Amino acid sequence: MAVDFLFCGHICFCCDCRKQKRASSVASGRRRVNGVNLYYEQTGRGKHAVLLLPGALGCSRTDFGPQLKSLNKERYTVVGWDPRGYGQSRPPARDFPPDFFERDAKDAVDLMKALGFGKFSLLGWSDGGITAMIAAARHPHVISKLVVWGANAFVSQQDLTLYNAVRDVSKWSAKMRKPMEELYGAEAFAETWEAWGDGIAQFAKRPEGSICLELLPLISCPTFIIHGEKDPMVPSFHPQCLLKHIKGSRLHLMPEGKHNIHLRYADEFNKLVEDFLEDN
Image 1 (cartoon, rainbow, N blue to C red):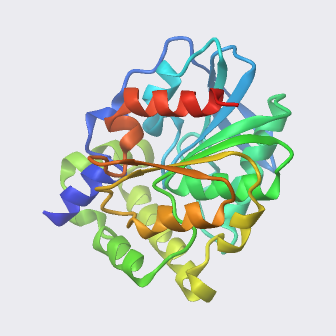
Image 2: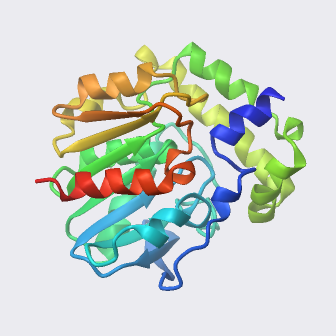
């Protein structure tokens, strides 16, 4: 089925790579931030703090196993989080008001401040990449570096077609649904995914379909864009747009990569990221 193909390369609910074993040294907890108890996981003891921002309905546990396990723990302190309404940051139930990306960006920055990090880098995947770009634009003095992949700054009609093709989870295979149904429950997962579809579609009604186009020129930190050239959910014009509008950014293309390059090609991806974070 087309849906199977799209999701094996998109959010990868059906792949074993989302179940990668996490490092035993990962600590976890919750912090009260902006009225919500946000769940986070933390590992490493390096001076360079890094926040991992997950994709739609994703969380630290589902989206960043290879990064929590294998990013250099001597150089970095790595923090994964579950945005409000996702994963273990519930309640509240997730909703998608017009400012939900802005809300997530504020939550992310405020969480890191609450954990004692005055300056840090952002690694954002898919929706998390959008959140990361907004955070970097809104809070330039606290963001050291920015890495994004599978992210877009606007929603086109082509994007809407792709989203609509995977909107109905009842058409997915049971194997693909299982991990998210275990996390959220079958009914809540279906409802939240459909709500996400409505939430992301609302940006198509804005001028140029903008999610955060007008903020891209405000990003001043070094920025690394990574793109899988076979990504079925993010057409290649999106990373090119980011490259054009984020001053001084660089783009790396992975010819065989789909949407989940940090999971499917974890070793290569982690090395790219570490080299960028270490580059002066």
